[in-house]
Image (cartoon, rainbow, N blue to C red; front, side, top):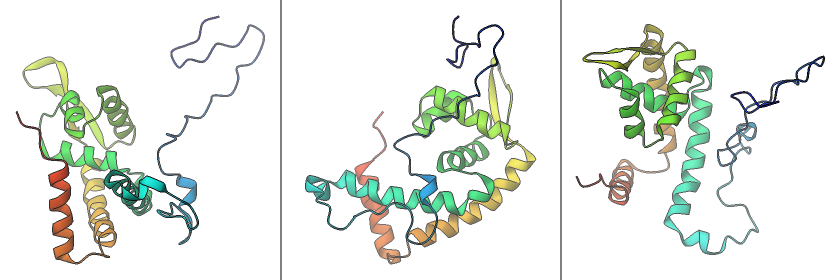
Length: 191
């Protein structure tokens, strides 16, 4: 017997199908089970661990900070089930009329297949809808639903509060310097 589209082989005749497998969690994503109390979650520098060259790498320092900020973001937006990619997509879709899926993928720096999964999830949550694209009968534009607009408004307030919390260890001048330095590490591509 050949597997179906999900890769699962069908049950043999006269037997019951095996229970559906849960979707595997991205092994490089922060562990949602670890976001319990104040001491739970990612520790960016575990005591008595020799990190070797990692302590000297800019990229590793940025990744450590990113994981901590990601954990706080997910906790702050848990009631809406909004992750950073979902929030980014909602903002981009809301601000760019007639946006197509391929354009969203390019803007977010993800594969088209990843954008399909992202938009499918937002559509299942009734936050985004696909509409026929003006001037292109083969394509669809992405729009926020009424629920999507309301959710984005509330989630944006939570994100602003989260961002203020995430940056609270820095002064306003330090935050501006950090943003400027990060922009220099990731400048726009030259055309």
